[in-house]
Image (cartoon, rainbow, N blue to C red; front, side, top):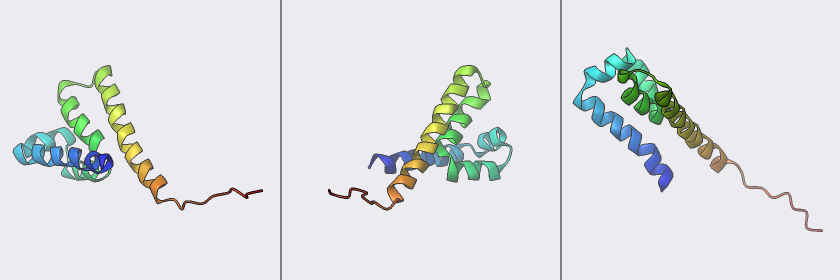
Length: 93
């Protein structure tokens, strides 16, 4: 349940932000294509960068961006491990 919300919430926030001010998001990413790629593959990183970049990228903003990237990579990793076949190597001696 938490993984579903973790995947939906940043995308919903990006859609609401883009709907309210599409010019802002186009200026931040300089291309709608980059925004779309971020929306699909790295939503947390895209959201955090969109909120942090207009103020300048300080070390604190880079740390937040790194946490967003780790959350995105964790989401992809959870999907990978959940799709693995469950096998047991116990031989029962």
